[in-house]
Length: 236
Length: 397
Image (cartoon, rainbow over all chains, first blue to last red; front, side):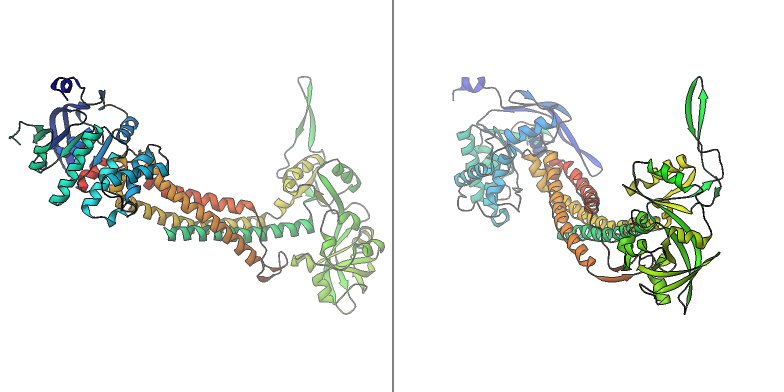
């Protein structure tokens, strides 16, 4: 991609002056104090910073799980802060995928059933959804374990199932909150490579919260955060 | 959850069984008293001789005014039975009319005497307003109809005086004695009637009681006995006589049955209530235990309604299972109970449990179970729908 065409592309997601706080026990936590940035499709952006600097909060706001106190989020050019709950829920299903540190699979379901969940919600028939789930799990190297219950898989395998679930509806934005934080180095490397591969192949914008500086360096962009603000590299 | 299902099954089954029993005895009692004393009884004339309906002219137009009979005084007996009979025939709902002379006498079998209540009547008329034909345990209606000196005895009178069909007895009345022949023995099941009542021909009864004119009362049957109160009120207004439907006449017993039915329904509903509470408890714990899964479902696009639906569906499945199994168990238990021997004599006569098969018992049980399970599922479902995914995920990390 040329530099010119890179500049011409409209950002997939854009945040403007996001501010947010929440209560932790009795005291308020000012998690974001005015965060602005944008991300393009196909780019992998690392969000780095110490614990409590607002990385996860930013991810939840961008993933439309929460509403900012002030500021605006534009997804594909559309403002999201005041969108209806129904609209935000539908967008979460169709355009956004989540991967969390602790995979958060539903243990009563098999790997393929976990992956098929977003597809079933979007109206795909059961057999079609399970076929798509099998395909995705196969691409992620779990073709032999699709019918295993989630809690019978290793940590790395569970995280790959979580990635497959996040990718099931071919989202344009993937939000990954320390997806390698709970994995050994081999599995971390494996998961990171898969994310990069999907970002490139499927033109997905990935926002990756990580504590791992090596992984952050290998991303297309890096957003260092401190005390609820995006700071210059080296300041985090 | 299986305990909740079991509770609903037992709750519905017990509800159906208890209602089938209590209403069974009630229906049997009503059938007995309708078959013995009829749906409506006309007796006692109002002291007010002006009639119940007055014609009033007002502003040139004429209208009829019904007078209230509250606190009215009555004069015993029906003075002009022929006129009353004609008037009663004008009511389209009336299906039978029986004129009755009542009185007391002593029945002498030769070796023993017994005080009896005379019911003088025309037997062919009376079988139209009662179940006397089916209550006969000896003799026949025709034998009484053919013989003016025939008498039908209550079963306990016959037992006490050791009489049977064909035996001769003497009836000692206030004005004269009569030699009678036992034409048959009847058993109503109402012990008070079976030990005191005798039926004999109307004219024979007149001479024994010493009442050549008039009669004591009319027993009337109607096509739909449920409408007895309404029709009795119309008859009372029209005839000027005291007219009482079976519901008012047997009010005390009917209220006892109603109270029994209600109290058993309340008691058994508590099983369903406990099942509902158990289910609520299970769901409430499930919402707490599964709040992370719920948050994940929300994060991948499931709506609050989808999350609620999970709990409501689970509740619905348990309820459906409970309804099917409970209704089947209730049905089987009701059948089984109807075969249990139970001898009852007094207000009616039965040798086994009396049950009433009625769809409404099942519908009520289902309705009560639905309300309890519905509330037990709906409250946790609503709580689950309100879970904020970001908060739960943040707290899970």
